[in-house]
Length: 271
Image (cartoon, rainbow, N blue to C red):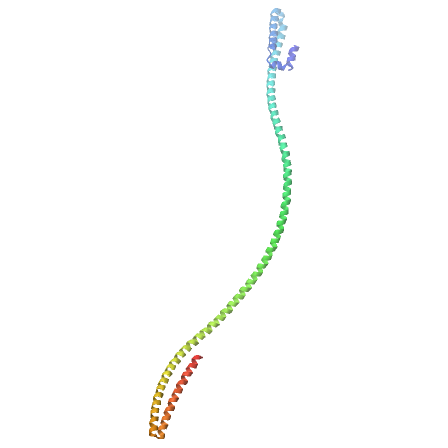
């Protein structure tokens, strides 16, 4: 009984899980012994029969316990495999985490170096920005000066345009006056041209008259010469001499008048 009790407390569970034939043969031996004892003892086998039934019940319980232990063992094995796989996975994860930590530490060092470079670059950029700001301020001042200069130039341009307009207006007025004077001169020249045409006609007439007068004078002079010669030869009377003198005086007066008219026309044209 102690042996079965020992089996029931689970200490020898591995031997049950292994399916030991020795244990089963012991159980079969006790079962056969009970049968023989019942057959030999005759009527006194009631007590042995009760013990046998108790043993068989205990054997059934042990078998059930064995199956439960085997199931638990199988589950334990499966759990151990799962735990081993999980442990392996965790070891890999730990290794990966260690690698990540090393990489992170290296990255942190690189980040520190990069941060230092960035700070230096930032300081450099700030200095450059200050220079650019100063240059921009100078440019703004130059632009303001240029704007003032442009304003001055615009004012000068407006003044020049005003002066130019005034000059143009003055020139237009002068041109208008000159045009009026030119028109007056043209009218005067037209009148003078007409007057000159009339004077030229008069001069032509006077020239013709002068030529006629000269011809008459020549004829008269010829006649006077002939009569003078005849008078000298015949000693003419004083009346004949007076007539000849009057004729000569009239011819001279006509020539002088024609000459005076030509001179007057010439002087008028010169004006």
